[in-house]
Length: 277
Image (cartoon, rainbow, N blue to C red; front, side):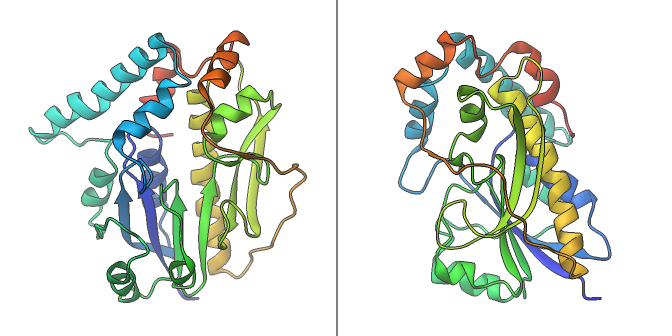
């Protein structure tokens, strides 16, 4: 049985993606190995960090922005200072790769010829898409020997698009979950190869939902890679009705809070700032 060569394309985000990638790295086995990775900035290619921040000010209260800022300071500033004296930073995707000697390819445009040429040298079987802010175009989708797989933190085809955790709360979903699917030239579409749901967490916030769906995602990715290696993957049909969302508007942000819903609370620190699932 051939060990699959896996390449990860994600973004540099401190709270949840490092946990997912650490879980993947720790669960490499005789079925798959991670041969490389790319980290992108969190904002989309046609956006700036200012745009990224403005999107969030539409849906956060000032108090929620303060809590989030404190979380970021803990992850990005405090641990960055500690790293200067040799302390491992568990909230930095790059640190996970460096600790495990995983090669990183740095690029601005994942669909560029330069980048594709570098990927071809790695003989990649599966590319894993974990919340990257750029869309995969045709040449990238066709590059791996087996498949491009996207891990999406909702129960597709429900809540295609962005801010899935927020929309699950806003629309009153009774369950949350994650979907892993093959990628085609359409956002959050393709054939579903893995899906799991759990009841909506008690007193859920957007941040707590993100934690639980990313935890399910990590477990599902390992399970899916093992099945691909053993040729045991089966395509699934989803019982959920399709919907698509863009970033919430300011008016929707106000309606969200009028319902008594919250993006983040101090109590979320136990999950958000944990070093692993």
